[in-house]
Length: 387
Image (cartoon, rainbow, N blue to C red; front, side, top):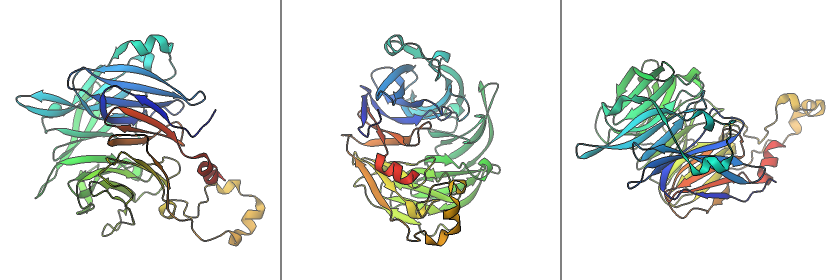
């Protein structure tokens, strides 16, 4: 039974890392990483059964430390990367590693939930990325359309391109570049563009957004003061190759055309505190999710700058002859951008939002108190988009 009501899951640990299982396009699955100083940290595998509206969970032990970031291979459903804290000589460094989950926890090979939810499983370490030689790792991003063999990690002021070889058992540093100059030269986040045959990456540091060519590791563009304060997150429009969205501590969400970076194409000011996370819907790029320290999740309809500015999301093949003969009768008044819904199920800072890779209408949000909420795009809007 499909229903718009949210489904809530409590982790019992603080948490800020969330990802869908990117390579899994059949089952609805999210991974959440915990932040606990006292107990062993864990990755919770959240499988959502949308027919019965229930969550099944499995737990992976992540004993090496608190998880700050988690990302999954686009090609292998069993492989993931984490960035985690490791105390060393009186200071804490954030390391990155690539892991494999046990075979029986890969989607499609379900044990009965009774057995699995009570036992914690181990992760198999495949390789370390860098192991702090370049400083603390903020995030790891995978080549989106690749075979899962290329990742970029951002460590302090270094952008590092890795080749994962020997079934990901070894990470070889293929190339790198560094931020130079004044200001806070520390990367906060980055995303690998799904366009340009996988050659472009965007990064955030301080108030700046930069584009990089992954082949030469040279800078393509720089938006010096993209936000008034720290830029927290970025995402690429999945359908428009030059469009990029960003959010930050100035409470704003901005949309950019990377061919002309003097001004944002659009700015949203709906949140009342730092905006930590922004994600475009993978199929319908007018749907944009944001999560903030105001403990709200906002779903916006950015139709004017989407790939379907007239709200028409049907393939040309689906048009009847009649529609093709009279295209001029279509209204040319573009629908207005608007907030579709504001979700108030969290009581703490929302550090991450993300869409399911299996169901384009379903998304998850995670707040620091360990509350994971699964929501759906309101049904009325869904049908409006499809019609």
